[in-house]
Length: 580
Image 1: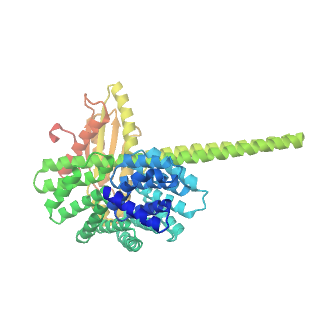
Image 2: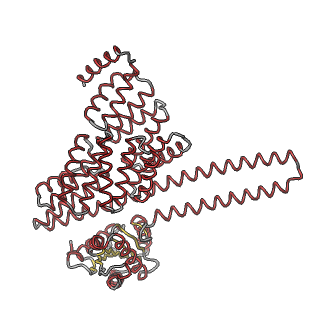
Image 3: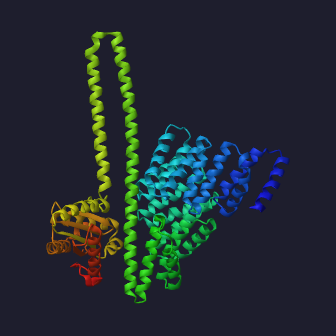
């Protein structure tokens, strides 16, 4: 820090000799820091530290920029609380509209990383409504770029793809940084929609463009995207050098989140190539990360690799433990996505409600003015006025009715699985817990069935994800035709489902489960356009005297399911203590 302070003083004297004022020098320093955050984070940190002693000389606008750039530095180091604090400080300097927009956008990112989704999406909606009337296209482009990151986090890939195309159309290459981000997100959305070859081509285009326009961080992300595309195409030998290149670039930025993600992919590639020591090294490093929610996905992948390594070494007990942990982390990640999606829908709904409320107030004001004018002009026009008032009241009534239907629509979307239409995991478990309370109060029976499609990944790989979706929908309809209306049917995630049977003993639940298994086995797949067989494995468990919630019953059913898978698949077993 001392070295940079001395350099700063020398640079200041040189600029003064050249005729630059101190204020102009500070602007140059801030511009240089902003550029270095995209190319050399270590040097940027040094410059930020060197400016700390001159903060009292900065103008309010310069101070707002300084603390905004400081927050970016903290984001790279995963210091999310410090980043949020720096942004709050930046807001206190009453920044310009351009800097204010940038602060709001980073506030959205920080609050997502802090898992305060309600606050994040409220800020996002506020900023989008704020810039709606701006004529500055680049402010809109910057906000839409931030929205792309949020849509990625929400797994809303179709909306993400259309928004990326909108940004590219609005920007027209005017801002190279936003153009890079839009090109990158366009490729990411295509990748997430499983169009791997097309995604690889788009990632290559963004790599070339961003390299030419001085955006090395986005260039690194594009190289990583190409590596993941080849990984999904099972071309591990091509994917490995790309991911290793991306890792080296991310380490230069100290971008810990991306470093961990790349290592998760590399640990799998090293395992598939037989480099078990390297695979174990990365997997154990990732599994040792703290329990923050941002590490859920990489820890899940690490446990999958550790399970494969343990199985290869014949330690099947340890392999099972790692698989259980990976499954639990997968469910936790699914819960996080559902939480974010619900918060995002609620923020959008709240924003729409406020806009409707403002429109209603404007309409009411207009009515009052019309009423006053009519009374002053001619009292005999009361009939016409009454007719007008009645029409407006009907309009307001229709507006409120529309809002009510919209609210119910959002509530239903938050409770249902988007593909199959049945309850999602959270809603299903909440309903199941409520039914369990009734069962316990009546000293009745309660059973749980967990179903998992056998070799579902093979169906996706051989026939495509459209056929996989057809399979999930068909299986869902079969189960719905067999269970009672009072039973609770939900999708836990992927190809795994749960059925909760209130007032049902284990033997009855097992018979229903066997009927479901048999009917699924009889499904005629020719209507999907392909010929293949479908089978399902299941586990059943019932209420124990010590159970006070659904969780222990669900856990035992999961153990029984694992036993069904392990002993040949296409069967349903009731839980036995010996399974553990």
